[in-house]
Length: 349
Ligand code: HEM
Image (spheres, helix red, strand yellow):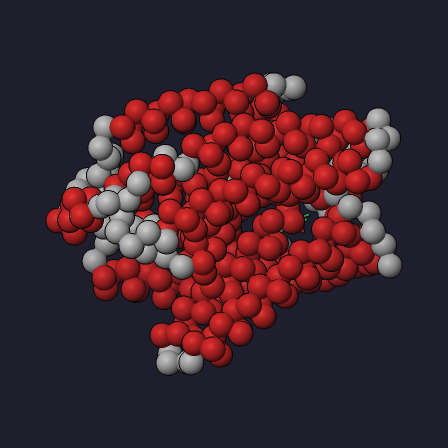
């Protein structure tokens, strides 16, 4: 339950934002209901040989779901004065941005529970239940809090940044670098992974990496609260939305690697990641991994770009310079995502 503070109460009372924006979260929530159907139809048209463009077109409509949610995060954050309902709307839109990893996590959990073939029914039930709950909650004048003092918030933000830099250098940059080589085939990817595994599967380092990821999730969840209460520009929206995505992605991905695969003795190599030999798009379950993985790569680098922008700004760098740097890293992110996704879909050089 959220509790009111004087600052938050003032915001609530000063609010003059329209009812429409306060209920905007219903749009990405409705889109989330469509998400598994987009995947299923894309898979079915592929199997029926309906043509690449139809399959790709339908798959792109799955990407439209987090995109709509991201737009809602941005629009609800642009308002000059905010109300508790608008804050809630922005937070719920952030949740909907994480639709792809949420659907993957659900699929893995149902698989582990041996509940097969009911993913869409459970997914629909959960989103409808959430919609009903937040409709009632939102109607009963929710209140928001700003729970952290400025200094606690600042220190946590620095710790979050340092830890993300460390995980990036020690694990994530090599991990993504490895996936870039998927376009050269399984053997090349495997050879690089064998070298990297010596480092990240080291008995001391591996638990530290996992703890660092849990710290990123928990500190991110604390940091996102004040971030969603103030007015936000496009980069703020990208930072909070990508953070929400990564929170669910990391939880889902670590669960897949360690519980679903390694616990049962499955080799977690590139063949496993791309669903070889069937392929991701041709498999009714695995097609969900296409948006799940590609947006993870994109949002990870975008999240770092937005963090870099905050650091440069607070160190007196000129706006023109930090804007160029931020957009440069975002474009790099799109390129890296395109290459990794192409490799995962079977493109080879
Ligand atoms: C295209 C995107 C990605 C693919 C295909 C992928 C695939 C994989 C695979 C196959 C493994 C097992 C590695 C092994 O057995 O040695 C793994 C491990 C892991 N991945 Fe990813 N990954 C992707 C992106 C990410 C991202 C964006 C993150 C974090 C934000 C991440 C975090 C991790 C972690 C923490 C592990 C466990 C490492 C360990 O063994 O200690 N991955 N991933």
